[in-house]
Image 1 (cartoon, rainbow, N blue to C red):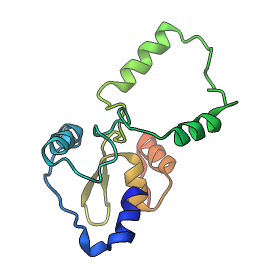
Image 2 (tube, rainbow, N blue to C red):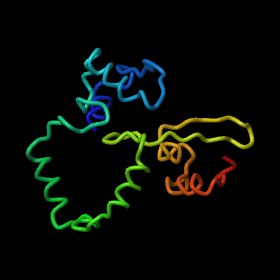
Image 3 (cartoon, helix red, strand yellow):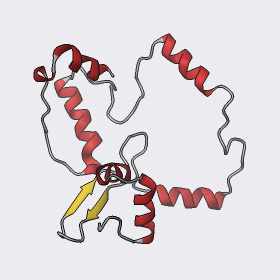
Length: 149
């Protein structure tokens, strides 16, 4: 909303969007943090790429967050997880970047043109394809095409 308000106030013509560098998805957060330190962007909301740590919130915002989660319970709160289950979860998560908005990269092959497009996550692929993320995840799991892709 901060950037949105600035665009409406100052006009779109007073802003520009540039691709600073092309890199592999695994390098994205590192490169983004380097550019944060170098350029010190005025409209950057988070001090560290992919992490809300260090974000300064008003007391009003903190109170709203507190009120919104009161009475809700985490579905697995208090449950014991076996060592075997913990090891399987650990193996499944190896190589993933946590604490960020970036998921596992997804390659999408267009079966008609044989073009491959790489997305930073299944959710971004779903958004671009105009389908639900669960449809993408099921297609990956079952190795079945969706919309001829």
